[in-house]
Image (cartoon, rainbow, N blue to C red; front, side, top):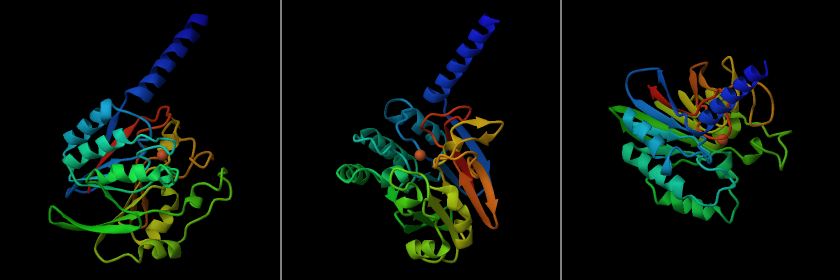
Amino acid sequence: MLIFILIVIFLFVRYAAAENFFVLTVRREKLGSGIKIAHVSDLHKRRFGRENVRLCEKIRAESPDLIFVTGDIVSRTETDFTTAGATLRQLCKIAPVYMVFGNHEQSIPEEILPAFMEMLAGTDAILLRNSSADINVRGRQLRIYGLEQKYSTYKNGSSYRHLDGFTLAEMNALIGIRPDGEVLLLAHNPLFADVYSQWGADCVFSGHVHGGAVRLFGVGLFSPERTLFPKYTKGVYTLGKTRLLLSAGLGKLRLFDPAEVVVYFL
Ligand SMILES: [Fe+2]
């Protein structure tokens, strides 16, 4: 019996180590047939080979038309952005890269932020901070918005209690009312998906929840706000006419929740 228990523990530790150090999956979601978008989120301090070359190779092999990076490409405690810069430069050679800040970029210490912005300026990535870009991809006209809510929607001092909410009026104040045409929204936090839907986004690309960190039987257990069973963890959700496209991300500790790049056919 003891040997059996030891074998189970050994296999579990080996699996967890592999998942946290080596495993990188590609999830493909066929929602249409016009364009291909690769979605990268929540890399944090995780590395897939030197300068994330394995990650970039995986994405290159998919030949996406666009790459969206939906925040937390670094962790707030990082001070050296060499790898983030090298990763973004590789991605920019594959396809145009649009990105938003996550809660970690929003909370980079004031004295470190210039180094992060300098790193970004050394890449061709287009950072959208409550702003938008009009693009034409394969004859399809798109407007891409990047949303950045106030930090108090993520954390209240050092606490995760009594966080600020987010309303349609606040969203309109940040990025204006939805224009005509096809609109894609990059928004790190999926928690306010109902507001993004009221605003009228066609598709919302989010991360932040890391799939729930631990997944059992397809259910994510933990939220970044330190609650159990968050509403949105990973996958494609439909809210009215809006699709929420939520990546489980790449970094941080995880269990039965492999790191993923998502490729959408839209
Ligand atoms: Fe994150």
